[in-house]
Every structure is written in C-alpha cells, then in structure tokens.
Amino acid sequence: MQCSMRSADVSRRRLDAVRRVGALCLLAGILLMARAHPVAAAPVAQTPAEGEKIFQEKCTACHTIGKGPLVGPDLQGVTQARDRAWLTRWIMQPDVVLAEQDPIAVQLLAQYNNVPMPNLGLNESQVAALLAYLESQAGGAAGAVQQAAPAALPTGDPAAGRALFMGTARFQNGGPSCLACHSIAGVGALGGGTLGPDLTAAFNKYGDAGLAAFLNTTPTLTMNAVWSRQPLTPQEQADLWAFLQQASLAARDPATLNQLIGLSVVGCAVLLLLAQLRWRRRLRGVRRPMVARATH
Image (cartoon, rainbow, N blue to C red):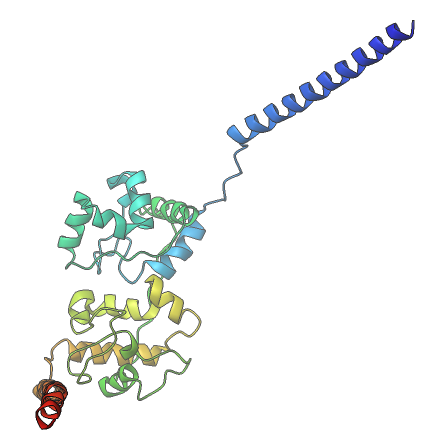
C-alpha cells in the first residue's frame, strides 16, 4: 500500500515537472515568435510643413522651387522626375551615391560646376518630410506653401570681410575665424586650414545669390555644427560676401609667393647645415680611435 502511494506521488511530481517544462517551452516559443515578427511602430508623421522647415534650413543655399537653378537644380517637380527610393538615398547619402559613380549623380555633378551635394545628416523621417513638401510644391498649385524670399544683405565691405576671414576682427556671436578651416588666394604666406575647401573660387562656383544663401544658412553638416549657435549677422555675411567676390578675381600675391620661396630656401639651408654638422661628428668619431692607436 505504501509503495503504491509513493509511486503515485512520484508520478504526480513527474507530471508537474513535465507541465512546467512544457509551459516554459511554450513561453519561449511565444517570445521567439514575437522577436521574429515585431509589432511595427507607428511612423512619425511627415507633413509638408515639417519638410518646408527643413528645406528653408538646409536646402535654400543651393536650390529653389520654381525659380530656376541656383548652385544646384530647380527642385520643382523633382518627385515626379526621379524615383522616390533614389531620391531618398541621394538626399541621405549623396557622398556615398556619388562615390559609387551613380550615373545620375555623376551627370548632376558635371552639370553644376563640379559642386558636390553635401551630406546634410538627415535621417529617414526628415527626408520623408522633405519629399512630402516637395510633392506639395510639384504642381505649383494655388494655395501651396510659397518659398520665402531671402532678405537682401546690406552693403558689404571687403576689408572688413578680410579681417573677419583672417581673425583680426572677431565675429559678433563668437564664431571662429574662417582661416581656421579655409584658405584663399592672397591671405597668409602659408595659407589657411585644410578642414574646408579653398574659397578662392567660391563666388564663381556658387554665384551671387548662392553664396549669399550659403552664408546665411551654412547648410553643410560641419558648418551647421559650428555656426548654428553663433550665426553670422547680416552685416558680417555681407562683408564676407564682398571679400569672397573680390578674392575670386585675385591671384596669390607675388609677395606671398616670394615669402614662400624664401621660407623654403631658409628651410633647405637649415637642413643642409644640420646634415653637415652630423657628418662632421661622424668623421670625428672615426678619427679619434685611429689617432689614439697611432700614438700608442
């Protein structure tokens, strides 16, 4: 009798253990299925109004909508002319698309003075909002959101712009001098920084309106990071614009070239002198043991 009770008790325990294991396996299976088929998160709303804000902040330096080409093409009807997937990737990663020698990207680069589209650091949601705005402008229908005209700059002073570029005059909002990242003809014997491009031909590349819009919006990722919290004043923009316009017509000053040649000659002379001294010391190190042996 006792053996039967013990056997029944063991059987119940085994059954309970099997049930627990089965429940755990079922729970694990449900979790794996949930991970394999996650619930899609609700997409972030992408409205033309959000896209318009992005366009005004990032795109107006190079593009218009229905007002003709600027630095880059007029974007009126671009959502109908180009595949949406291509547009999304092009806006998010223009540098990558161009590096892959995409034929459309290569054609655009050649058509617009070899000025590459900068990577603006936009995410997929921002690009979707921007495309929604461009789609709303595609037909130019009445009642569509109109692109705001940029405010006219005051009269610029090239000398003041040069001082700002060089850093001998400080920007009102505390930004760094342009020479820290850029070089330009006629400024400094050794040029400027190399983080950004040489700006000698900037006026010719971007044109009157394009350069003014670029100074106003600073759309590239690096410039936006530097200038978004310490923007240029309208007068500073005008002064830099005037200086860059003047510099586009200038070549490097012959006096500057003479300074570079002089520095190169001095550098070579110093290197030759050091080499001569080094060689003499080498000969002394050989002669002294020989003289010592001869005297003994």
